[in-house]
Amino acid sequence: MSIHVKNGTPLYGASLCETCAYAHIAKGYRESELVVVCQSTYPERRVTFRVRECTRYMEVKRQSLKQMEDMAWILAGKGSKRQAGFVPPHEVPDEEREIELILSGE
Image (cartoon, rainbow, N blue to C red; front, side, top):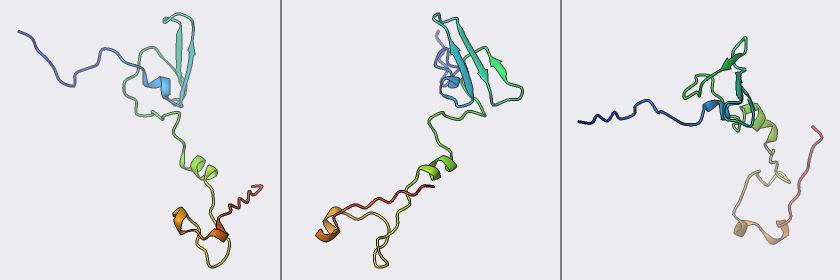
């Protein structure tokens, strides 16, 4: 008789700390040479196991709202008749087919 448990505890997998913005990870040449320090807690704590779930996890590739606002372009119309935004290429008149980028020093 065999028993199969659905959604049971996984026995292996990558640690969430490998992609977390709060993790400080130092790896050596051997698999046993690994130091993980969680910087989301005070005081910082060493993590000695692979983490499957974490309530303070923040993906390192994800930007905050402030970071996205800083890199966003502000679109302004060239004149009072034009609205800022994107239009399909076939709707742009030939005399307006040039691109003007104004970079501010801010």
